[in-house]
Image (cartoon, rainbow, N blue to C red):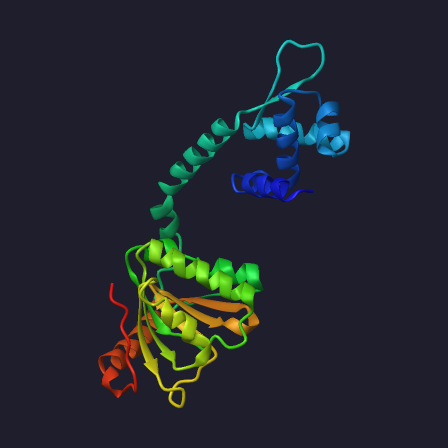
Length: 259
């Protein structure tokens, strides 16, 4: 399967089609219209499976049965219509957000703990609830970059760009370490306000940051992130951070990225 094909299937996954449904939809799109046999030949799926999936696409509003023909034919819904309908469903679902949030526990001491492992999951964790950070600030204690793979560094670079593009300020403590020299060169570009601490004082290989009621514990070398959602924990981390920041004269070195 070509890379482009994978990307198309992944895109259709995002609007609610599973892999086989996406394959059949693409086959039908390429044919313009066709029988289950023709779609089966085009998609590479077995004919009985194709019959079932075509009917699933009709039920989902992604395909139509062609009326008044001697044999059963199917026609795809145009991609722009499919996307428009998906966007409309998302808009309608967003209206339910206050009601959905009200279903959650209101206990301030309740913790929700999520564990992410592997490069793909690590990236997912970095963007978890980041839509709430637009125009706001993330504070934290960042680790050395020692032992990070090139792929992980690329993920972090993409994340830093996302933060800058969405006006997210990062205000952080970091250790004075050679592995972070590249990041110090891009502090201004990526809106990081950094306080550098002597390695003898702060040498962590684990990062901790927080925003809203989210606390992230980041283990770079293991491609792992633990997310804890808890109001009181996030408040405690912020209070510790703010105390240290106000007393930054104790730090051996301080640099600021101007906005």
